[in-house]
Structure formats: C-alpha cells, structure tokens
Image (cartoon, rainbow, N blue to C red):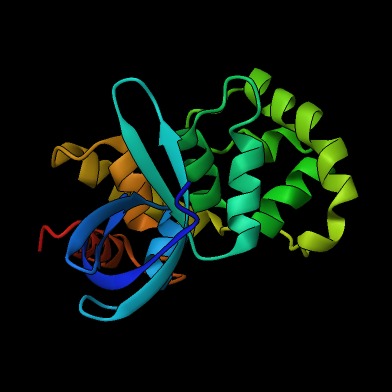
Length: 199
C-alpha cells in the first residue's frame, strides 16, 4: 500500500495532480478543494494516498489531511458509492461540513453531491452516522456556507457557458470550486477557464 507521496508538483488537471517523485511521475486524483490548496508547479508537496486496485487499472487518490482520507475511505465503503462520487462529495463540502450533514441526517444536503440521488444520500447517512458518532473528535463540525440567490445564478450561468464550450458537467463543477464570492458570471467564467487551462 502506498501511504503517501512526497515530490515536486509537475502539473495538474481539473481532477488530478502530477507529482514527480524521484523521476517517476504519479497522477493522483484529488478533490477540487485539495487541488486548490496545493503549491505551484515546481514546488514540493506531500500527499496522503489511497490506492485502488482493479483488474483493469490501478488508481491513486490523494488527500492533504487525515480527516479527508478517513472520510473518503468510509464513503467508498457505502454500497453504491465509488471513489469518484466520494471525491465529488469532498469537492463540494469540507470533511467537517459533510460529517455535519450526515450527523444531522440532512438528506437534502447530502443529495447536492453530483451523482447522489435520494436513495444513495439516505444510505450514506444510514451506514455512516453510527460510525462517525464514535469518531466525533476526528472531525470538527462546521456548517455549510449559504450561497446567495444572485451568486447562485451567476454560478449557474458560468457552468452553462462551460457546458456550451464542450466541457463536461463534472469539469464545470470542479473548475468553479473556490471561485471568489460575489463574482459576476463573466468573472466566474474567466476563473473557471484559467483553472481548466483553456485560457
């Protein structure tokens, strides 16, 4: 098992970072929240990892904190939740926010994760609530941030523009993460395009 990687940031995509570890390049899939916190290309980074081994592929998933990795491992243990869905959850919410939603049995909040329907959201809460209650000290609960209607509209417009440019819904969601609060639709689009490397 590869527990962590320490190397130089060689590049990144909207979904992953490329780490040069002693001349070997590793592609590590990460949440958009963690990707946005990584240092610039050419600088050193330490990434905790989870290796998924399947018959047709080996995939590395990366995390900047023990809390994020721990929650990822618990999420993929839920029936019907795969690694990509778990990363989508950690891209939308911080570990503390997601744990808070689960502890509060807030199906609507969990359902906001891309690809998660009502049944899956209910299953996540049902299967994880008890486990997370026992590990409450690992996560400091933090309420989800409210998005104003105006900001929500600008965000939706920017994502729609990205879709019309040929980007996928997942790419649009990830590219808009961490955008400046209160930004206009045009500013959000410019921000997203820069993150996608299209500008």
